[in-house]
Amino acid sequence: MNDEQYGVGKRSLENMVAAPELPYLPRDPKEYNPGIGLIGCGGISEYHLREYQKAGYRVLALCDEIEDRAQKRREEFFPKAEVVTDYRRILERDDIEVIDAATHPSERVAILHEAISAKKHILSQKPFVENLDDGERLVAAAREAGVKFAVNQNGRWSPHFCYMRRALEQGLLGDVTSVHFSMGFDHSWTAETPFNEIKHLVLYDFAIHWFDMMCCFMEGKTATRVFASIAKTPTQKPAPPMLAHAAIEFDGGLGTISLNGDVQTGLEDRSYVMGTKGSAMSVGPDLLQQTVTLHLDSGVSSPALEGNWFSNGFHGTMGELLCAIEEGREPEHAASHNLPSLALCFAAVASAESGQPQTPGEVRKMP
Image (cartoon, rainbow, N blue to C red):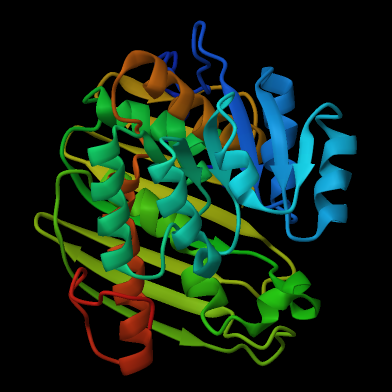
């Protein structure tokens, strides 16, 4: 590994210190291990179930309109689980306390309302909703019903992002003034999939993780304006534009997100969080391979992190929900905490459509 390429220059190496020990790994509840029902057994469900199996969670039922998909997941991960094609069968079961709703957003709102009525705790796949009004109604209903309601923003538990979040939470960086994400990646695989039909594939479906992390790192600041644009490259294979960027103004800070999904060589994923007391950066060829560097007054450090986005992320989202239920508190990734991320994303897409800056929160639904 080239030290300068990954954020540690020669001058910095002279001031290297031990990295702070921060609790970035996923947590499991001490005793609580409820029955879980998964609704939606599409491609992403493989990553959910693999991590639940590793963690020893109890998945008791799998639901999908296409029964063969649910049967396949049962055979792969939870051979004793019940397979159903009607999600209401899961909601009727008293031994299932937690629902993992992994359907498409357009189908999910009705399922979430019924799950709340059935007093089930919920982990909703992202994007949570396509309309902020729907999201606010669901959050209010869950609060009234005493239901813990979280969103599967699994990037929050990716090792590099979670370590940087913990550094911020412990005051190591001070007041964050700017956050910058840039990524050159190969998204050409989507050309032969249903993703090819999503106009804002990069700025919406993909970048939702980075809008969410922007809100996490800018916690406590209000996003006041966003300007975004999209474009196609001359060589891209997918139909949706593979270039996207967004510039975001906060009260007391600035953020940028720059994405190129048509990079074939020289892939890079870079995140940089700058505060009044220190900064944190993470660099690597992709979101699975990252090297974090902290620059503080005490010196420069680079922790050796375990895991990757997919393993830590999908374990972390369910684990944190279960811990929150056991401890009687709101989960870190509560649905209410995800609404500002969606507002930022919706405003960015509206800006790319109109060519004009937009105010987050005023764009109430996905354009």
